[in-house]
Amino acid sequence: MKFFIDTASLSQIKEAQDLGVLDGVTTNPSLMAKEGISGEDRVRRHYVDICNIVDGPVSAEVIATDFADMVREGEELAALHPNIVVKVPMTRDGVKALKHFSGKGIRTNCTLVFSPGQALLAAKAGATFVSPFIGRLDDVSTDGVALIESIRTIYDNYSYATEILAASVRHPMHIIQCAEVGADVATCPLSAITALFDHPLTTIGLEKFLADHRKAASVKA
Ligand code: G3P
Image 1 (cartoon, rainbow, N blue to C red):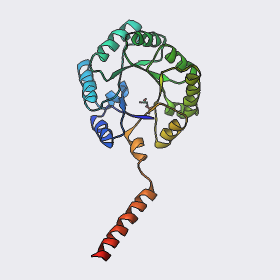
Image 2 (cartoon, rainbow, N blue to C red):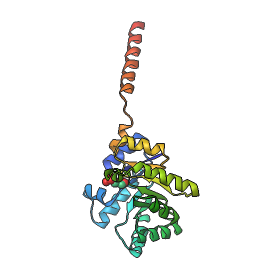
Image 3 (tube, protein in one colour):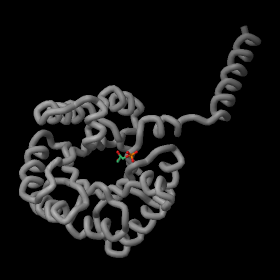
Image 4 (spheres, helix red, strand yellow):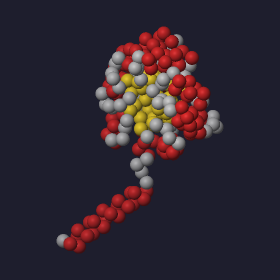
C-alpha cells in the first residue's frame, strides 16, 4: 500500500519524505488555507514547491465547480509540474471533467466520495484515484473502512484500474484497516504515519540488546 501525506505543510512533507516511506501528497483548499496559502499565484507556487520535495503524485484541487472552468483550471494545474494530479469533486460536472482529463492523459483524483455508487461513477469516468473519506463517515456513525471494502470488491469485479485512495484517515488503526481490506493508497496526517513506528517492546528490546552488547564488550576488555 502506498503512503501519501495529507497536508500542505512543507515542513511536514519534508519530515515525511525523510522517513523514506512517502509515495505522494494530497492537499485540499482547507489544508492550503490552514497553512495561510491564498491567491492563485501563491497557491500554484506552493504546489510546485511540494512537487520539488516529493517525487510522486501531488493532488491539486480545482476550485471551479462548473465543467468548463474545471477543465480550464485543471489543465493549468496539470501544466505546473509532471507530478500534479488534478483533484476534482464528486459532482455531475466533476465526473464529466474526470472523463475529459482521462481522454487527455491528465491524472485525476476524485474527491469527496462517500458511497460505492459514487466510486463506481469515478472509475467509469477514468479517474486515476478515488478518495473515499473514511474518517468523516466514522464521524456520522457509518463504517468508513467498510466503504473501502465495498469499492475494492466492485473494482476487482470489473478490473477497474482506478486506485482506491483512502482519505480522511485519522489514526494508525485506520491505516492498518485500509491495508487489510486492500486500499491501494492511504493519505494520512504525519502523526498517523509516525505512530506506526512505535511499539514499547521494540524500545525495550533494543535497550536490552544494546545493554547486553555493552556488557559483553566490558567483560572482554
Ligand atoms: O484527504 C481528505 C482529508 O483532508 C479530509 O480529512 O480529517 O478533514 O476529514 P478530514
